[in-house]
Image (tube, rainbow, N blue to C red; front, side):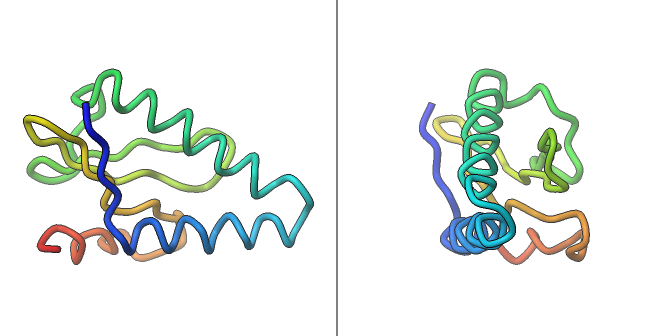
Length: 98
């Protein structure tokens, strides 16, 4: 199954990884590894996680206070946001139309 990142989701992901790296060397890499593992799990069974609205689902990231918001289409999974729990709960909504 094909994976597509919304450009804003990818930008925030890089920013968050850089933040963790500044806090402690290798923590940014560990964060990105956790994201990679989570995406592999999502791709293996995208319908496994409960929808939070319509076709948008949320995967809670182990160890880090983040969730991956994504939607599934017949031929791909689209990552809408990698959202820190302190961000507004609806931050992914603007990514639906783009």
